[in-house]
Each structure stands twice: as structure tokens, then as C-alpha cells.
Length: 425
Image 1 (cartoon, rainbow, N blue to C red):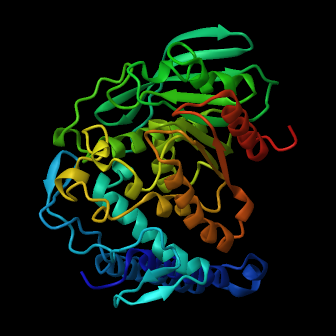
Image 2: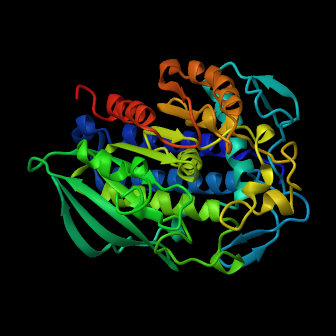
Image 3: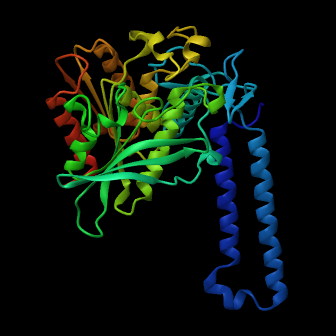
């Protein structure tokens, strides 16, 4: 299709809605009701005018949507969604040869345009989100947002914290096991919350919950002891989350399935009366570190973000390691394990988090994610944080040692969360 790009479609429809609201306000100004409407005929005429404006707005919005540019998957690939094999959409956003260069966007005519304003950046950001979906598969929409139907399996006391083992309905076909921690609190108080994402481990959620694995990775328990409501879900196929990857699931990648499970986890946290829905963060190590980033690119309700040993640029990484069924198979099947062909990279993803506070925590001796590649990503994203007036919200923390989350790194991470989610604590 060759009509409005999706980002402009939102803008056009918003403008139509504002015009309609203005018209209704003029017609129904309560201060002048007594003099404006003198008989039933006047009121009927006004009602007809409002209906006509509403109908026109709906028609224009529909036309704009039908003419909106859609993301296109690479030639030969197909989108798997809702259990169906769908042909690739008609057009991708423009490609970018250098994903670390965030100083420009490409317009509809294929011309490079400098990013000088927030609106300019939002065009590039939308391109990044669409390219990410061309690799991971489409982000599920409202039809997949089924009732959570939370079920508690067991409950236990851990010091001054209550731990609940539960499951929630992520989509129509799958329930996600998780641990929820609620610290003791004053009646009626609202607490900040943190979504705690696991590393690659068979024990799944049990490790961040403090029930298995490395004590340095028990961050769901640690943060609950600091006063946060925390939620630790199983990544698909780990822990108690039995999951068979494949087209029958309706997802093109394990990464997108995990993103959707995490978005539903945010739904769960916001459904709790004890949680302040405007103070929700996310933290993760390794797998949990990049899952934090992937989820936050699509989920604006995550306000503060910490990734430890979770990423570097694809140019300095082992690209085939991203291609298993738990992750993004299209990197191998479509992009031939070539970092230059993959249509997104982490410098862009970090920039997409702006202006939200983000801590990049990395080990200088990490054999999984090259620390120089982490520095490259942060360096590239800084101008976007500055453009959005949030230069101080992007922080880096580097420490000696291997791929791990030692005491000094965790202390910095927890204090980072406190600074933005518990100001004055």
C-alpha cells in the first residue's frame, strides 16, 4: 500500500477526534445550554450534526487505516500468527545500513532526514519497532488480551514478605506460572512494583524467587525485602512453563511469546490494588536482561529498566546464538546469521527506551556479551536521550569479572530502581 505511514495514521485520526470533540464542546457548552437550546427542533438538529461528525470521523479514520503502510517481512518469509500462515504484508519501513547511527530517519521518498525534533525521532522509533517485529513476528493485539484469570497455587511467608505461587492466562492457549512477592505494608498504601526476569536456567522463576540457583540472582526476593511488589514469571519452556515452540502456537519466535507474557505480567501487577501502576520497573540478568529491553520497547508502562549482562551490538556478538526456537529463528532462516542483514540492533532498542531511566550493567570480562559492544550501544543512544531531555536517565555500570551479577553490581542496580521508583526512600 502507498498511503499514510502508520505513525501518521495515528496522528491523522487523533486530529479528527480532536476536531470532533471541539465541535461537540461548542454545541453542548453547559454554560450556554439554557439560551442555546430553545426547542426540541434545535436539539434534534444538533444531535444530527453530532452524528454526522461522528460518522465522518469514523469513515476518514477507516480510509486512513486502509491506506496505511504495513510492515513487510523479508522476501520469502511468512508471518505466523493466530495459528495461521499469513502472506507477508506489502511494505517494510525503510532499512538502515548502520544501526548505530541514530542521527537520521528515512522519509517516504527514501531520503535521509536529520533527526532534529521529538517528532523526527518518533518516525525512526516506529521503524525500529516494525523491523523488530519483522524478526520476532507481530506483537499480539487486543484479541489476545484474554482475562488474566489468576489462580493461586500456594502461599508462604518469607520473613516480612508473602510469596504466592500462581498462574495467569497470557493468551487463549497458555497459562504462565509465576511467583508474586508482597512485602508487609500499611493498609491502603500503594507500593512500587518490579517485574523480575530470569536468566537461562532450567529452574526458571525459582531462581529470582530465591528457591533455586545462584543466590546473587535472587532479585525478586531481594527487591521484595526492600519494599517492592515483585513478580517473577517463567520464560516459555523453563521452570514449570511447559511450552512447545512452532507455528501451531501463533508466535513466530520464543522472544515474542516472552514479550507478550511479560506484557500480561504488567497487566497482572496493575490489577493489584496494592500496586502503584505508575511505578513499575523491570530487571533481568542475561536472558532476563535482553528480555527486559525487548519488552520495554513495546510496553511503555515499564518506567525504569535494568539490564545486567544482557546485550551488546550484533556486530560484536555470536549471532547464531540468537536463532534457537526460544529466541528468533528468522535470524538464521531469513537473515542468514549475518549481523549486517538483521534489520535492527541494540543501539536502536536502547534509544527506544528513552526518556525512561535505563541502567546498562555489564561485566568487563563477559564472554557472552562483549563489554565494548555494550559501550557502543549506550554511546549511540545518548543523543536520543539528550533530545528527549533525559540525559541523566541513561546510566552505565561496568565491573570486573565474568558474566555474573555480583554484590557491587546488584547494589548499584537496586539503588538505581530506588532512585526512580522510591524517591526519598
